[in-house]
Each structure stands twice: as structure tokens, then as C-alpha cells.
Length: 168
Image (cartoon, rainbow, N blue to C red; front, side, top):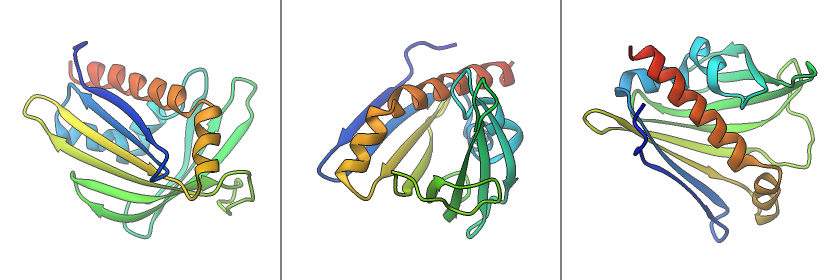
């Protein structure tokens, strides 16, 4: 695996946004699939030792991804991502939040998070730009304090390993 790939994680408190730029040593179509197909998402999305399990993935505008991150103690943490806008192999946006096993959003200490994922072909690699916007500075500070940077970085590193294996 290439070690000199771009990785940048920034927090902008003024705009209540997290910016993550990550380069992958894989072509655009494979990276896109890793973000949009359940058989690949389930292999990398949850940071170890957690596992990810997709219940529903309806990847279309107006569709949703309903999934659980499963702890080593087998506790399921359900989430739902509602797809808003999709431009194939370019970008997708949507809203993510905690839900129950049936997909109904539940009240938590966090509001839903708006995601924008952009994909850029860089000849022999793909750069993904992830922007997460939160409703309040308090929510932004909560996700940072609970370890979002470490958890998301771990997941992206797992994706690096998966792409390396799939590229062989």
C-alpha cells in the first residue's frame, strides 16, 4: 500500500463542519462502490473491533441506508442515512442519525448530521472529500469528544486495506 496518500482532517467551528480529505490508491469506480454497496460498506464502515451490518441499502435519491454498528458485546447501534442528492461517481449528500431497529429516528443527545461526499479521479488514485455539517457548535464538539476523528480515521484505514486486497 502507498504510504504517502493524502489524509487531512479539519474542524471548522465557525461553520460547524468537519472536513476530511482522503486519497485512496484505487480507481474511482471501486472507491465509489465501497461507499455505495452494502457488501463492501459492511467490510469497512465500523471501526474495529465493531462490525457493520446493513439491514437496508436503497441507494437512490430519496432512498436510505439502514445499518447497525455492532459492538464486541453484540450491542447494536442503529443508524439511518437518508440519501438526498446523488451524482453517480461524483458525489452524494444526505442526513445521518441514530434510529431504532425499524429505522425510526430516536431522540438522542445528537441532532442528525448532514454529509456531503465528493469523489475525484486523480489518475492512479481517487480523492474523497467528506464534509459533515452539524446543527450546533455543541453537537460538533460532542462528536469530536466522543472520538469521531479516531473512529472515522480507523474506518478509512480499513477501507485502504480492503481496496488494496480488491486491487490485487
